[in-house]
Image 1 (cartoon, rainbow, N blue to C red):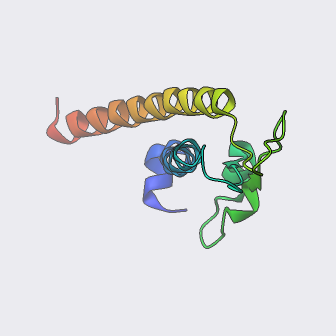
Image 2: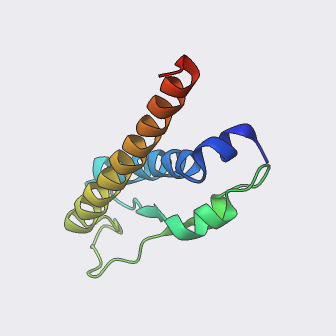
Length: 113
């Protein structure tokens, strides 16, 4: 087990996965008007299970199935993407706050406070 895993648990891995998901959702939003663009998302729970040293989380990435198909083949639905982005951003901030608190605690312990 790596030292960071002992200190931070799954929160460091979760933060990295949330960051990857945020970039993917942002890409979906940016390509909302691109004909033929296929929206993708990360199944976070599956990605977390796959996030072992030396393993790829690519198996947790899937194309999104639209509720209503677009005539130009684009599968981005803005309401879905924006909601997923907002939820993911909140979870990202929560993991970041936990890690920040953990680092502050460790820092104070090392200083003998």
